[in-house]
Image 1 (tube, rainbow, N blue to C red):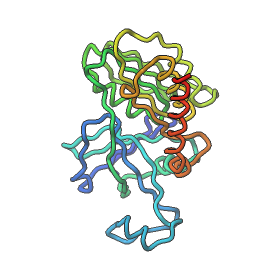
Image 2 (spheres, one colour):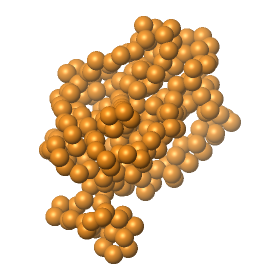
Image 3 (tube, rainbow, N blue to C red):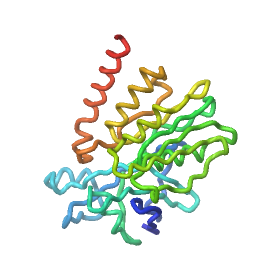
Image 4 (cartoon, rainbow, N blue to C red):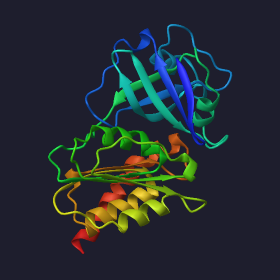
Length: 266
């Protein structure tokens, strides 16, 4: 870890560097993610670090927890990997860890993965999400060419959490502070109220799973957007830990698709 910086009241930026990133490579996506490995309190692992060996030799409660975070930027020349973490006090695992992280610490992770980048042939772009999707949304906006048309909606806790974003002149970025409202409510309301431009859209919609479910139904059944024009998924689920959400996410997604198909058929 080479730098840390609070970039908003509820977000800390961590920059990783060093020889450990010598083989790190991305595939051109704007939603690249890594899985940070966090050891349980009081647990240390033998060197060299070997996740497979840990899982074979140690009890499950001593395995490192995995937390998925989007890559904000990757500078191959400097070998610096930037990741932004949402922090809400002592809630969760990765947020509090990031808040107290110090330069010089060793950070282990898996990845990267990724699947989305804005289609340069699309007539316009829709990007919507909460804080968890902000790094990917920002990276996508920075990738858009001059003259691109895009509507971006970002839900945050408070106005002070709004960040400066670099985007082409034709892009509209709307910040949606919750100010105590339920998570996802401002985002769903804003996307539903958007007057869609003419032409083919390419959409990126990620964040809390309940809000994403509502938006998927709206975009697929009410707006008629084909699934291949949507990158849409619940990054997290209100009331569930990351492990608990991962355990049910596949089944939950299948149920959403089934309900969607039934609604379309009706």
